[in-house]
Length: 143
Image (cartoon, rainbow, N blue to C red; front, side, top):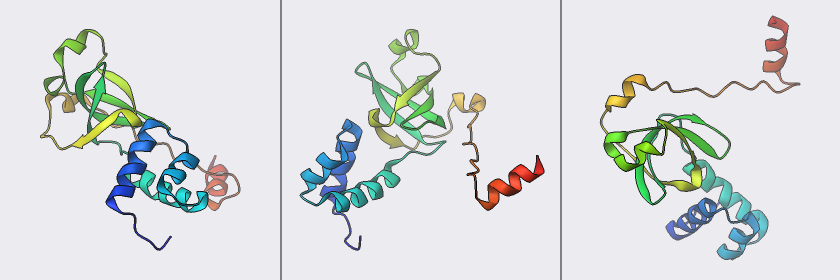
């Protein structure tokens, strides 16, 4: 796709992805054909996918919470909560780690190092070797 996305289009796609709207519905809202819509959606998806180590704010039961992503799952993340930056009343309900859906992430924040960071272990994603690739063949020969 040679055309750049406008801020309005990017905002609409991001909002609808967080709501769980289907790709065909998003394409319809953008007033483009399905294939063009898919390209637009994929470009935004790549830009909004969080990374391990990102510090985020999110809502849980109408309370504002802040934490650091320690592991990524397919559409959610394991987050260590920063209690000094979060609603302390939630400490009785939520463990020190919780699962946050990507759609529940409100914002990415920059914070100075937190007390909790001393104990945080960032869990890297496993390396996947697809069968039939050079990496897979090399990996299996070494076993």
